[in-house]
Image 1 (tube, rainbow, N blue to C red):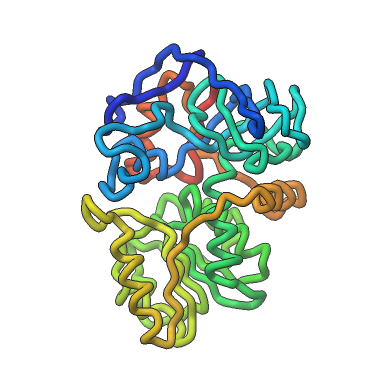
Image 2 (cartoon, rainbow, N blue to C red):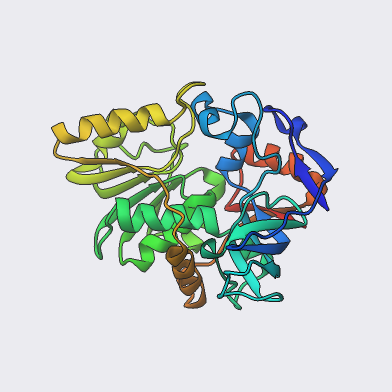
Length: 322
């Protein structure tokens, strides 16, 4: 089968279109014929091997798994003997291993039926990014109806989902984004938008009950100035911060500081729970969330897609079409 694989860490030039063996489904697995695969920041970290700390789990000198990609949508090709929820031919979406390929293996519990109201490309954009948004809003942020919520990075892959999830939970949502993304953020339901190129969200005009920082490049002191005295800050992004810890260093500092201040400072560690992936499918079917796709790229142009996402200008999600 054709797949995008890498044998070393580095820039998008390490990604090569190769012919490799098709994976097989284990007893508890589903083999999916991939129609589309979503890009997320995690794929970039695995490509570059940065920050270095992540290599402890994914391979120190080279990635243990050669094929990138985790978000996917497609049709079930084969199932293991213990799989009961799916059969060949079913349309599914969720999280697999090595989705930048014609076929990918996924655990049964990390897949859900594809919502009939969206395309394969839209479904491929959901699992990793929308799962982070759902758990940031519901679990880490504990967002309640009527709360004022600020979403930093509202126009990106996770941010476009976070805006919609927070609105579904009854919050008054303010999105922070660049000028080019203001109209998009308003179109997906934000009550207010701040253009960070012309206004500082921490200028004292507003204080927020919950702040979700998805962009990941602002200091804790800056973020806390915009947070209500007993508000909650959720650090969703792990960008910047050096080669060894990246954004994890800022998250660790927030966790250590939290017991000594009135504000609640949290990091987000996404749990890939199957019931939450199914919940996302329900929110899509009811119209509460709709995946936002910026661009699609064919499999052979995955390196170009990675460069586009790394540039930081994507409005919503970038998707690879197999």
